[in-house]
Image (cartoon, rainbow, N blue to C red):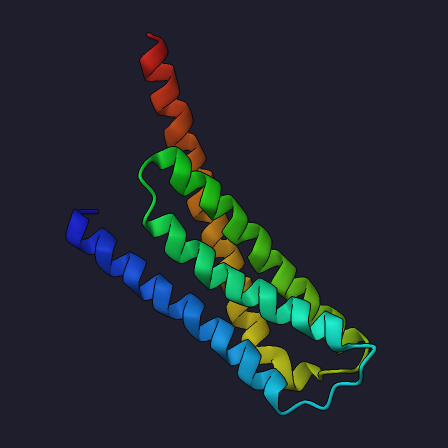
Amino acid sequence: MDQSGKNQFNEQLRERTMKMAADVRNLLKSTEINSIDKPNVIQLIRSSSSVAANYRSATRGRSDAEFYSKICIVVEECDETMFWLDYLVRISIMTENKTNVIRDEVEQLVRLFSSIKRKMKEKIEKNSLKSQV
């Protein structure tokens, strides 16, 4: 992928992760939440916005190692977001119907970022082997 294509891809993913975080927040905005469940809801908002913030940071990385480090965080935060969505459904704060679209998007992002992480790890390992020769 040339630099222009890479920049366009990064911009599309920055927008996609930002939209996901905003969609999570907006979904919760209209949900009545009691005080005992408020910390769980806050965790969902934090993890979803962390996906967007850390991906943005990853694209500004100065090296492959820095990019890889941030992508690892993005994968973890995406997976955590999925956990909190599932948990809030399980404890009846949200319904499956209400969260299906966002859960599908988060699952797609987990798979996408996991693939990026795996490929970046392979690239770093390959470059490490080259430098040892």
